[in-house]
Image 1 (cartoon, helix red, strand yellow):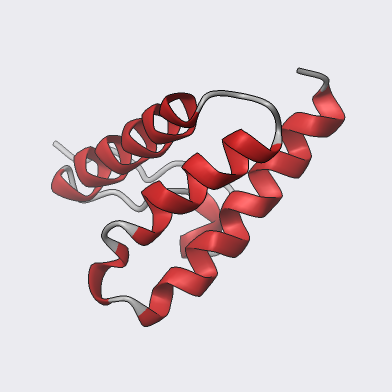
Image 2 (image 1 turned 180 degrees about the vertical axis):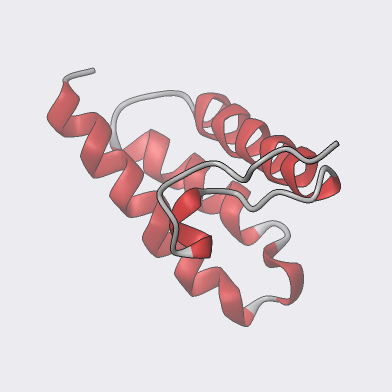
Length: 84
């Protein structure tokens, strides 16, 4: 997959994520959307599902550790400082 197609795939997943706001918890919408996008790009649906589930697990793990999913969500471009 070329870099341009990867950026396009990422952009389409963000659109699906935004549409999923109307679904409580966005459960199922994000995964099904990723499967559809993968099929559009000629990949297997399970590849899209795996990508979505990996991202979901990462988001849950980061939230459990008290971190946001990305620096963009906090408006800062640096990682939070560790306190002892």
